[in-house]
Length: 231
Length: 201
Ligand SMILES: Nc1nc2c(ncn2[C@@H]2O[C@H](COP(=O)(O)OP(=O)(O)OP(=O)(O)O)[C@@H](O)[C@H]2O)c(=O)[nH]1
Ligand SMILES: [Mg+2]
Image 1 (tube, each protein chain N blue to C red):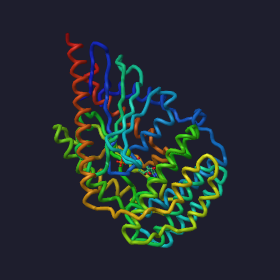
Image 2 (cartoon, rainbow over the protein chains, first blue to last red):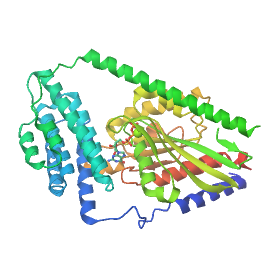
Image 3 (cartoon, rainbow over the protein chains, first blue to last red):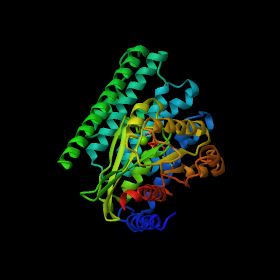
């Protein structure tokens, strides 16, 4: 390494050390014991969810359900999170019962529900309306899954006690949510694999189109900038 | 090639977090953003599918002040790791100056790491760049899962399978907990700016 090289390296290192000091007094790092404790439980649950990516057996599923229960205790006073956990539990139970034969969407749903649960828990400044919307979306997906399962097997295997459990927890302003969940599902339209696949292809094409469009916009902007600077 | 504006005395550096799907690239940027946004005054731009998969890319720009008299602007990007999004991945690599390869330390992801590194090599070659010349840092992520009893690849195995030829710096990390996230980023920024020193003289 040359001397010059060394000076730029040192200069950058010093600057980065100043900017990115990880002192724990940073304002976004307010440790609160109970808070941290449930975050730890959330991490444990996440590990369980990660592990069903490659194996589903009774042990793993029991520990997953156990971890959901542990969190439910912590959040019994937070209705939205509580409902999230009930949804997770319902899907978890369904997967436990059906294991390898579980509808593939159920595992995806478990992941997306968990992801959104994390978002809601970690972002303590999120407005109630947004939390509700996120929950509603998951409930909708849950309903769709139920329908798909009915279509798949002609009977529905989401544990039934789930519906009774949800009902008393939700009374006042989220009645709409209630109805969405407890409404018996309509006779299902069997999901046509081909329709779904071609919809996915269409969506992918749209994605690529808009990527290309935004790339071109970026290029044009670069070019304009470049012309301005070279005039 | 970094964008260097001699008139405005400005240098813009593009760093891309690359690696297999679900490896933790987005989590790296989120950690940096959450921890430092009050200090680096920036916004994160993320384009995702429903759920948490990156669809196009995540983008986190910030300034680090003057380096060699130039205003240094850093842009961190992530690519979507899912195999099917290769078109986007190679687009995001356009003009890349430095790369963090986020490998997933879970044993079950070993092949995906290798395929993704191979894919990086190919995509770079589209831009006539060589993986052995571009500033590169490895991050072996999800080390925290060890305490959950989830089988992880050892540091030695990861080094051997991914880094035995390249021999670049490598960090064991947990993007989720923030362990070595900042160290990884500092290293790649330093290496990248150092690689530009001739142009900045
Ligand atoms: N336990 C653990 N989980 C992690 C870590 N880093 C990321 N994850 C989790 O792994 C999942 C995927 O992380 P992302 O950051 O979205 O992965 P990505 O590489 O951006 O994935 P794509 O956008 O699909 O390419 C998320 O659920 C993260 O919370 C880690 O260090 N430890
Ligand atoms: Mg991502």
